[in-house]
Length: 305
DNA sequence: ATCCAGGAACTGT
DNA sequence: ACAGTTCATGGA
Image 1 (cartoon, chains in turn brown, orange, blue):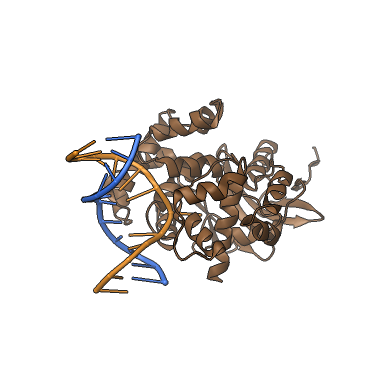
Image 2: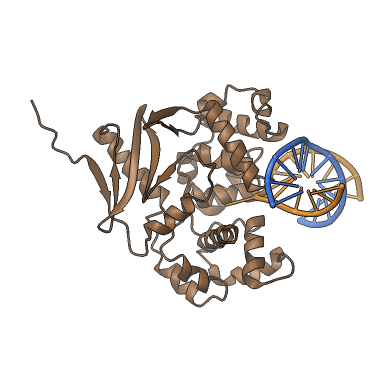
């Protein structure tokens, strides 16, 4: 009989310029979020790796991200994939040194970079989840967007109960591909959004739209134009997904209303800036537009508190 | 009540 | 290419 010779937890050593607390603040921005839960200094999240459910408790101990498994210790493969997921989720591949050098010489970003130092773009590593969330968020307020997302997950997702609380997985595209528009309209999705989401689920089920296919494209422009071919994905959604799922720090959802409002606040403007004005502000942000956008979004959350 | 919301497709020019 | 219109309903 063998003894278990691996540790019952994973340690992830983040790069410089990482602040777990700041990331936790972002993760806690909506009390309607059901895909993770914050308890004390840790975030709990359920993952599924090759059919294996993995409940993670993610904390920060001795300058390392510590991932524990409150229910059961996953297989070594699942532990490896869990580590990779968390690495992407917190965008740990970026070297933020250059972003902070830019920010320090930028009128708009200087204070934000100081305030939220160590915050990384909290990603959405799952392509289907990123696309659905972007489509849900089109042209409605964030509060209602979270309501729709919660209904969608609780209607079609899987869950696991631990210590009396439910931990949800985002619904699979395989399941959503089989729905009718009416199934989503019941949850108060508009006809359009229901069509977009179901069509995208079908494209993914057929293997026509996958994260792998997008990653293989040689540059940003190719990824962008291939995403635009799918109904329901416009420029904003493509940029949002390239930023949050494919982790391009140069992605820039320039038409985003949240970005416009944040700029208005930061600059003390009477009105929202025009696209042309934003291009002028963003001239300094080359290569780091996604981080500039994300820090500006983060500033909106402070206004609510 | 009124305006607008972390847009996109469609239509007409 | 570009501008205007429609979708559609909740939140503040």
